[in-house]
Structures are given as C-alpha cells and as structure tokens.
Length: 303
Image (cartoon, rainbow, N blue to C red):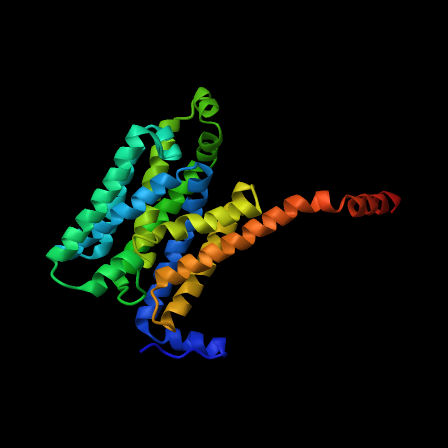
C-alpha cells in the first residue's frame, strides 16, 4: 500500500526521505539525470537517437544475465551498454544517424535479439514477474549504496570526458569534414562520445528501466533544443529538465502504485510539448505583431 500524499509538500518530502531506499533513489536519480541531460543534448545534436535507442534496449539482456548469475544488475547494464557502444562506434556515422540501410536493419535485428535474450535470462532465473517489470520499466525501491557508488564512479569520468571533448565534439557534430580537415581526430572523438553515451544509457536504465531509458535520455535534450541553440545554455537546460522530471517522477511513484518510468516519461513528454509550443509561439510572434515591434523600436530610438 502506497503512502497517501497531502497538500503539504514539505511534509510529504520529509516522509518520502525518511525511508533509506528513497534517499538512495534520489541520489541515484540525481546522478543519472545530470549525465543523461548532458549526454542526451549532444546525442540529439548529432542525430544519433537511433544509436541511443539501441543502447537502451541492449542494457536489458545485460541486466537480466547479471541477475541470473547472481551479480548486481548494474554491472550487467554497464557491461552490455558499453560493449554495444564500442560496436556501434565502429559503424559508419550515416548508419547511426539515418536509421536506414542494410546495416541499420541489422542493428534493428540485434535489438529484437537483445530483447529475446533478456527474456530468456529472466525465464532462467525462475519466476519473478516483478523483477522483469523493474528491469523494463524501472523501480525506486531496492537502490543500494553500492549502486549509488557505482553510478557516481561511472558518472564523474563521463562528465570529465564530455568537458574535455567539448569544443572538438561540437565541431565534429556540426561539420565533421571541416573538423577533420583541421586535424581533429573526428572518428576518435565520435567513438569516445559513443562510449560515454553507453555509460549514460546504462546508468539511466537503472532508474527508468531499459524500455523507458530513451525518454530521459532524449526528451529533456529535445526540449532544451527548443529553448536555445547555445551549447552551454542548452546543456544546462537539458540537465535542469532531466532533474525536474526525475525528482517529480520519484515523488509521484512513491505516492502511487505506478512505476517511476511511467511518471518520468510522462513528465518529460509534457515538458517537451510545452517547450515545442513555446518555440512555435516565439517563431510566429514577430510575424504576428510587426507594428508593435516597430513602435517599440521607434520609442527606443526617440529615447
């Protein structure tokens, strides 16, 4: 039975954080949101959402295999996602961005095989439907201190690597040919980012589950792209949106019988629609009110 929420948000927050498992969940969710928001913004910029979707699904059989072998599922997520990221990094960039062609069809087959393999490991573990639900759709209960430490250990190098890549990664993402002509090792930079994306997908899977990791990885970033095209402000907005939807999702999951993945995905989708509507209103506003803008400009000149 879930605790009952009230209109006193401070009291509800205190009640939620009185449980040690919720404290660990908030810590893990915060770490994951920061990494997913930052890596996701670059992923959307590079048009590598197809690759991100692949990494999200590959994490499921890794976690299921780890559970079957009696190992913490976090190690399975990281092992499978990072391994798949290395394989994807070896493919041509056109395959990762367009999602078409024979090779990308092979990736789609691999995705289906990954889901089937994950189901095999779940069945071998012998009968726990709740465990399957948690792997696919996430859960706020059962986050251990070891998992929080593992996420933090993986997140810090990821953020440092993203900061180091910084300008070369943006250059390669916007104009790969020009960057390569100026001596930037574009393939090495792209491969490094793909591994970073694999780590982000593995960490996010432990909060939202493998099927819904894509929502936290892409929706906040896509919403941030609607707000600004500036890299610094865009990444900051993406991280902020990811934190908001993660914290809100945890709160609603704690006070309801529905999994955190559903709440995080719903809030992320809702915020994306709001940002998209604001972007469309902003783009249309100058054409709708040209007279008022002329009047404002005249007043500024007169002043």
